[in-house]
Image 1 (cartoon, rainbow, N blue to C red):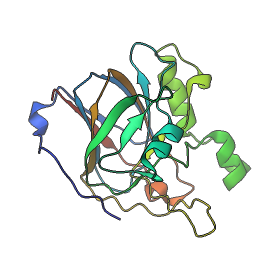
Image 2 (spheres, rainbow, N blue to C red):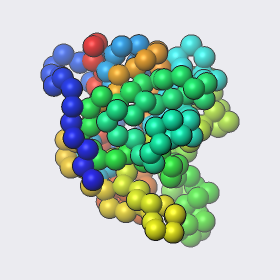
Image 3 (tube, rainbow, N blue to C red):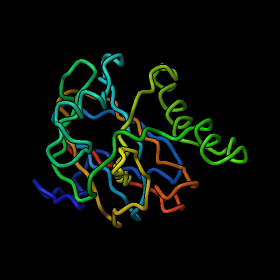
Length: 213
């Protein structure tokens, strides 16, 4: 399913921040209240694991459980309000061309790779390690890594209720935009996974832009 775009068409030349996150790499940055965060899948079929924390109190952070319960849907789409563990809106999705985004399958780790794909994958780089590297720059630890959003990752729910990770449907240039309802720290792992089709077995760069309105 492809979600339709909505809202204002913003010129990238007006962005306050415009960074490219290399394949497999982490990134973090501040998005102030009222600003718009755009994540672009540059080459298509790239999973972008993402966490949000309240900028002045990291103990308040994105809650997948509260977000899904409040909206009554299994996916993040246009109009979704991303809620914190305090039940407050952190950001809302205001534009989206990238389909229905997963927030249930979590982030890959060295341990989960080993269980799912064999001991030969034990030392492959993974999203959880990316998250740990990045949150440590802000004084946090692995205890602060919670269930994340997987932007652009295609995770259908099977008839028996199980989650499947299948080929992504996002195309080159697809994007999602969110308006911040509070000052937030955004932490991204540009997923390095090559053992399942979430990245088309080929991790690629993504682009992050922050606009002032």
